[in-house]
Amino acid sequence: MTINLGLAPMVALIAGILILVVPRLLNYIVAIYLILIGLIGLFGGGNFNLR
Image (cartoon, rainbow, N blue to C red; front, top):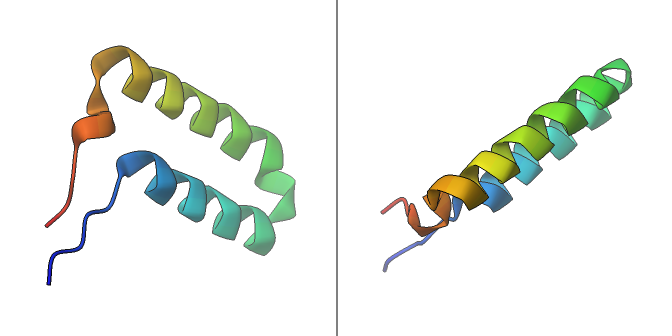
């Protein structure tokens, strides 16, 4: 069985969990998430898969 995990969904999941645990971090988490998604889009990290 092969499990392919994209980087963007993993970042989104971690960000969502952190927001639930520490709501005061919302602004920082959103900013970091947007920066990471932008970097992934620019440098093509969307093809990164964990196996």
